[in-house]
Amino acid sequence: MEQIIFVVWRERIEALLVVGILYSWLRQSGADGALRYLWFGVGGGIAAAVLLAVALLSAQQVLTGIGQDIFMLVMMLSATTLIVQMVLWMRRHGRRLQNHLAQKTQEAVDHQAFWSISILVAVAIAREGSETVVFLYGMSYAQKTMGDWLSFSAAVGIALILASVTYYLLQAGRYWLSWRRFFQITEVMLLLLASALLLSAVDKMIGLGWIPAGIDPLWDSSALLSESTRLGSMISALTGYRAYPALTDLLVWIAFWAIIAGVFRHQRNRQETVIV
Image (cartoon, rainbow, N blue to C red; front, top):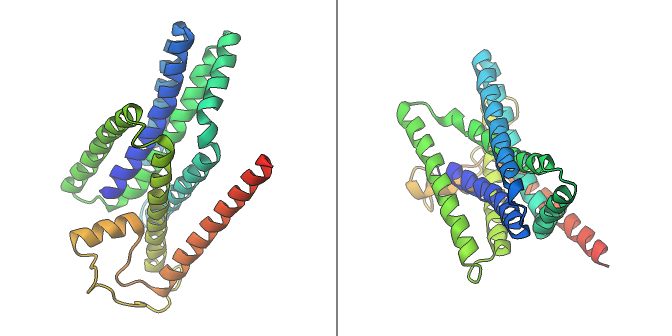
């Protein structure tokens, strides 16, 4: 459940940040008449995310047997990709997000094109919502009993509440935790989570016989931290830790972080080139 709480928490905060920036700008600029278009956009973004959820559930009901396994595997890999994409997007645009949103909103107000505000907000909310839906769907495969589903729903509810509280605290207490520091900390946690999801997908492919496990297990660290304990299970879910990893798990984990390091270096070089 820790994975669900963290991702939904982070995604809701990003959505609240976008809406909060636009709401504050419209109020300060005196364009109160455009506020209803802001809420139209919020509603449209949420509706798009709900439609995606319905489409995924409908697709699952059609598939049977190996088809469901393949579909769930695709969703897990999609969730991994979306999390990495989210981190890279925020690293690239986070610093200019407020100015970018303010510029687009100013253009809409100047031209009385208030529906463009709705579209801007709807796209932002739909983006965050779709990432959340895909992730939650990818996690739903582990829910078997009614108790599991109740815990699943409770985790989503807790995350939504925590996100609202966190957003309020960040807005009220920027002197002790800035938005920049917040995103720096959570991007590391998100990448760890992405690596955990990727390893879960790899384990599923090994279980299906699609890829070899190699040496399995490569080592046994259960004496130090067992995945059967509450702490070990939580760390495994959030970081991809394995007490009994297969060789393939280790190779995929190394490849994942090598690619992330390379992409980060590329982004940093591009930013330095632009500054120069």
